[in-house]
Image (cartoon, rainbow, N blue to C red):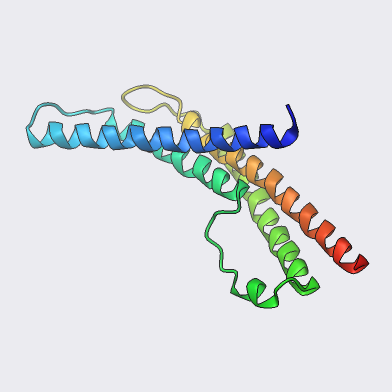
Length: 162
């Protein structure tokens, strides 16, 4: 199996996590609305599960979008520069700034994960389970940002050779 195939499978895996969390959240919210509307039952554990699913949905979804460069970005200036070397340099600089942010997010996310000793009140799940997605997604985004920096550097070198 080649690297591109592994990368594609990893992207599907990240999207699958996000979609599974979204579907689970939809059904939990739907069941909770029905149960409260008809006063069938109250789910004391509901908030704990929603919090965990939401965290995993958001951060794994962010990593999936980052991997495919489908996240929101204001690229007017880069588009205006076209395929000039300045556009390539700008892409590289933006990637370097993103790398700085993502490294900080990963380090502080890991710190939050490592320090978390609390258990959720009802289900007694470790809250670190919810926080573990922050450094994991941060690491994924750091790796893909390094890819983007490498691509920008390669593009700049090949542009100079022309």
